[in-house]
Length: 356
Ligand code: UT7
Image (cartoon, rainbow, N blue to C red):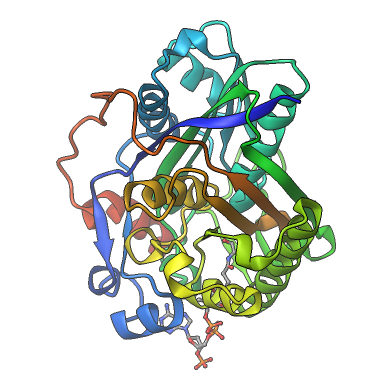
């Protein structure tokens, strides 16, 4: 049996950020509402493209695995905010990291995208089709934000996370997984006409996220909890076998509801929504990196991860960590400097949304 071991991990957080107090100068909101209703205190705004975020995260993951781009057979980029759609954004990441021989493909399953891509790359390794893959999730969610809509404007942020997978004889990596999509309710979370439905002459004006928060909240808790149960059954594990829960970071209250349903203790749950908000597909990838950095993920940890997003897509994954929690080497890859504040970066979009 071939397994797909996670041998590298890396992230890229753009430097500029916007605190809750700062965002309150743009939309009618306040720190008290945002932090108590969502757990978010700040979010990062990217001054560079999705491809650049993905490139830096991937280079860190490669160095962590002690590999170079040329060693990689497949680059999968999970994103719903691609830099370009033709050519796909993964092809630019493939070029930037020097993965000259690798296949490259974008995966759009919104917030569940990283776990979908992890499943896909793992399956290709297990089938013997490839030996090494980079699975990277990168998002510029702030690009979609309508800065006149307080219900959604406060929630999203930008960032990227990546892992390297390598074929291994040791039972580790993604060992059980379940993905799905409740398309009946896809309208409760969508951006109308972004894609070829858009009027190609007039354009659409500022993107407008249709967002029924309460309905999404309920479905997210149910969808992720049930997917976790399914994965536990598949893996023939019980909850006490799980060392770490790495959930999608959309709302602290959703995380706590899942945690309560699964009866998992606080100190086993990875939470970083306070710093980043909802970075869609990137939340789980960034959270895995930070769980390793802070010692929550240890050698051979049993990790449960779950995600939920537009589609309505959902996913849960049981991941067995390998024997290493320290990088083999380090990369000096970094983003170009940013000479603007978060508020300055979003100012043109804020103005356009207010005038639309
Ligand atoms: O990653 C994809 C998955 N996404 C999610 O899972 C997000 C799921 N949904 C949520 O996280 C929550 O539903 C929200 C955070 C979006 C909203 O929280 P809520 O507790 O469900 O609030 P609500 O939408 O029911 O609104 C309650 C009140 C309303 O005022 P009234 O009608 O009671 O007077 C809203 O107008 O809160 C008001 N409100 C705000 N107030 C201050 C909504 N947004 C804000 C805001 N600041 N930013």
